[in-house]
Image (tube, one colour):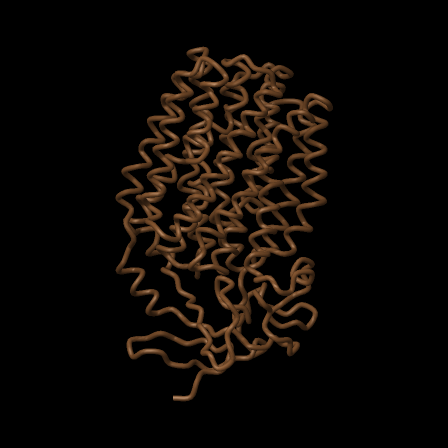
Length: 485
């Protein structure tokens, strides 16, 4: 049998590998992925800025870096930074802790509801378009929040920010990265999430902005940064196009006479994923993680100020400690996740979060509270890359955007309930002790869910066998040689 044409797809069936006919991208009736279309006549490559500046770098790593910078911007403002305005908003408007926390719960719930639709849009329109739109909507929402005068406007602005954040947060970058990596998937995803960790470090600066310009002025400056820098980074984020000349994972260049390594494109249908035991158990673990970690992130600064009695600047440094320590968890799980069981790593993350929350409940000083934060942070950080990595391993990447979005939706009730219930307990009891005990108990539930969520081997074997193999092209459309790695 003659070798298949470069760029051809190979259908894997019961009788082995059967070369499929090579179909030109311009053939009538052939659907070409948005991000695989040529820009400027470059075939598999387009005119994105960083790829032109770094032509010898594997494009997957460029996507990781650009996604990390976008997550840095969104995380610093949307996820971590809003904690710095929490007490200021309560003092200006006289709202209760529970009512203010409800807005942060609304942020999580709306983002979760939007996630499946965002995933669907990514699978059909491409990551870059969805990411760009998300950045613009999020920036507009942050700007609108700086002008609020009552609580319904506060909720409305948070609603807009949540919609944009669902498209511009780490979910979009994760979907793109999943298509560029297989053997190094956990590591690549963990490196992207480091951007969020660095964004948390910037909370010290955001707290300084709030003290210098007020919470409204600080939000306007953050919106300006998001709307100017974000789109420049989003240009370099896209999914791997079919027939891309660089080997998967950025492997070494092929030697003369050496056979090309095909890339397997497979995925379990969404309808089977959502009914599988593995998916339901993983969702339970993710819900428990979301409940506990979001409650800590939202209430960390108010807790430090209100109960521990430190200044806003000192409370901001605790967020920096949290995020720096979380980077250790992100990188550790990224390295270990490509070698050891991801479900056990997820269970370990839950144990750390539960232990740290218990320390917070018992803490009487800034030092003791910091110990709790330093236990929670690696669990929080490690849980971020392990979730999408295990979903991609279990169910493939063909419909990964939609699957990741559904998982986010189902687990988001935890993100919504956690901050609100902790805030309600603060209003009722006058302190955070009972809230942190609740967080510890829910975080501990991660362990049994994760341990029982074994891989759906039958589904994996069946749909990997029905997947398609694609051979990297040796030359792009302009006749250029393959890029180095």
